[in-house]
Image (cartoon, rainbow, N blue to C red):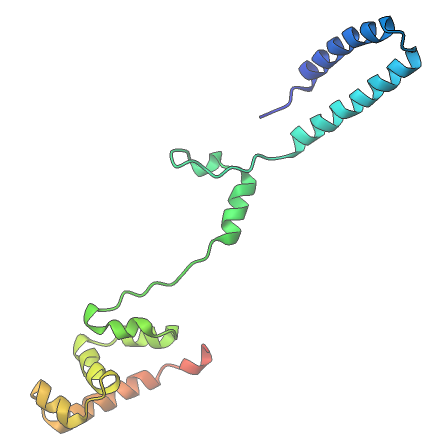
Length: 163
């Protein structure tokens, strides 16, 4: 939306010619008419300035492109937008999604499904090494070695640096 100053000023002056004649016919002095004209002209300039210096604050329509949106609205949307890191966890191990530490979460997601299964039994569900060995049909020393390997893998990550 633009303001055509020449056209609008021409309309304003034509309107004021009529008003000048009416005011003079009503018995107003030239000084009083000039003061009213000056006031109306000041209002005209104020409205023109307002129209030229304000922006429409509309969100882009779904059908339109972002370029059609108001620059002010685009800056507002950018200011209020946040990005959330989404981690997709394996459905069997939904407890991993409850972890808030990003580094620990990333480390756990790098483990194999077998390691996650073992970790779920041991750390999350509280099974003992003996119970896990019976469930998985693997010897106790093998389970202990795997738990030690997972522990060493996780120790590589500095989890306290993030918090």
